[in-house]
Image (cartoon, rainbow over all chains, first blue to last red; front, side, top):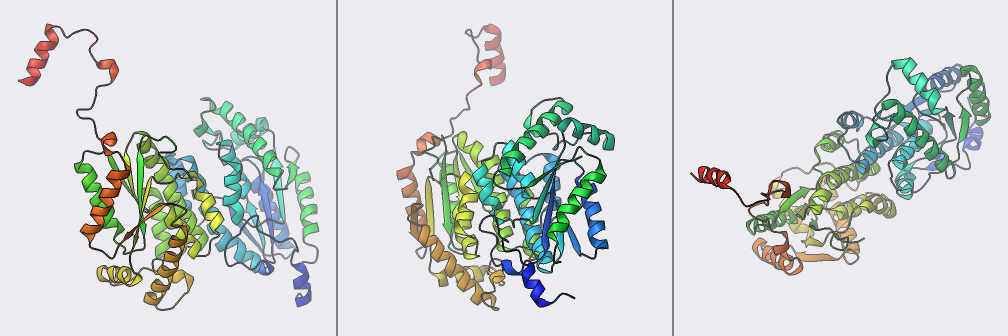
Length: 241
Length: 253
C-alpha cells in the first residue's frame, strides 16, 4: 500500500494536454502513466507492447492497452468506410479523431485516473503523419489533436522502409492497402508505393518530432536489445511507483 | 471566413439556422419547392445525415456514449463527409445548395456543451461561409411548444440531459436551448445572419425569405439549361447528310 503522501508526489508536474484538452478533466487526478509506442506496421510495435505488458504486470503494475480503431463508438463504421475507401480526407481524418477521442475519454483517462499504466499502440502522431502525407494542414491537425493528453513517454520504432517491406511480406505475404498509401496514387506498383509512402511517413514523423518530442528507437536491431532499451527508459519513469 | 461567391464558386449556398422547433426546416423546404419550380438547380442537405457516419451517431446517442468532445467530432465528421462529397462538387457545378443547419449549429451547441470555441471553429475552418444565412428566431416558449406538440418525449441529447442541467427533461431543454440561443445571438453579426422573426406566420416568413433570396442571388444564372447541351465531341461537324435526316425523321415518327 502506498501512503497518500507518495501519491501526490507521483503527479507529474508537467502533466498537460497538448491544447485545450477535453472539458471536465482534473489533471491532478491523472496519476497513471501513459506510454506510447509508435511505428509502421512491421516495426515491431505489437511485439514490444506485448513484452512490456508482460514485464510490467509481473512487476505488479496494472496495465491497459489501447490502439487506433478500437473505440466502441465508431470502430466498426470506420472499418467499413476504410474498406470501401469512400471517405474524403477531411472526413476520414475526423472519423479517426472521433475514434481517438472516444478511447481517450472512456479508456485512457479513466485508467490513468485509477493509476494504471496505459500502453498505446500508436497515438495521435500516426494519425497526424498520415494526414500530413495526404496534404492536410499541420496547424489544423494541431488544433484538432489539442484534445490529446501529453504522454509520459513516446517511443518511435524506426525501421528502414526496405526492411519494413521484407517484414510485412514475411508475415502475411502481402502488403496492406493503406499502409502502402495506395489511395495516394504514388505508384501503381504496390511494392514501390509502400516504400515511397513509408519514406514520406518517416519524413512526417521527423517534422512532428520538432513539436512533439519523442524518443526514436532504432528498430532495425534484434528484439532483445530493443526490449532492454525500452525497459531501461520506462523504469526511470516508474521511480516511486 | 469567405463566402462561396467570394471564393469564385459558380454555385451558391444558403443555410438556415435556429433552435429546434423554430420552423427553419419548413422554411427551407418551401424555399426548395419554389427554387425547383423556378427551374433552378437545387440540392438540399441536412445536418447529421451522411449515411455512414449516421449509424455511429445514432448508436452513440441511443447508448448515451457521447461526451461533448466526441459529440462535436462525430458531427464534424458527418459535416465533412457531406461537404467534400456533395456540397463542394455541386457548388462547382453551379448548384444552389440549401443546408438545414451549417457549421453555426456546431459553434453554438458544442460551445454550450463546454468545448472551447477556438477548437470547434478551428476544426470547421475548411468550410466556407454560406452566401446567405437565415436565422429563425422564435421565442423559446414557441420553440418548446412546437417540439412538444409533435413528439411527446424529448430525446436525451436534444434536451441537453448530458449536461446535467436539470433532472427534468423539459427544464433541461429550456435551459439548454436558452444557452444555445445566446451563443447564436453572439455570433449573429460576425457571420452576417439574416434574422427572421419566426413568431410570424409561416407564409409571411417564406415571402420574406424568397424576397431576400431573389434580391441577393441572381437566380437566372442558376437555371437548368434545357435541353441539356450535347458534349462537343458528338456534335455533327459537317451539315447532316441525308442519312442523318432520315434518321431524324424516323425518330420523329
